[in-house]
Length: 154
Image (tube, rainbow, N blue to C red; front, side, top):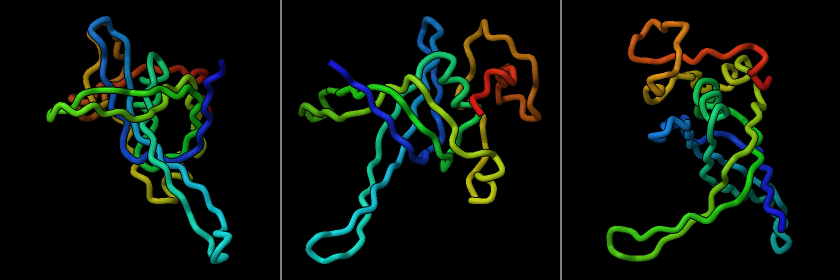
């Protein structure tokens, strides 16, 4: 069996970073992809947009949280998963999402500034206690993550 998904799209919201009790980073964000096609009946050009939830784990989650924001273009490689739950009214619910194994930035900071994207690469929640902080931002409530230039995927 083979389960691999490759998507290119734009983030629909800022990355949400959380940590498990064992200290594993989990980042979640939404991705919008689109497909342009020509309607055979009318000849009209149409566009189909898909919104997909993405989950990233570990160091990749921390890097995504620090460098990605709403509107940024990314390539995501991962696997398709089916999430199932029972809602508050007792009905069974489900949706497909992607667990990312690789997230590659497709635009630069300069390109995102030209497009009017918001460039706030700030952590949404505090880092795990044993994480070492080497820089302090001007706002003391926002943690920073020490990343070597070799670790940045662009």
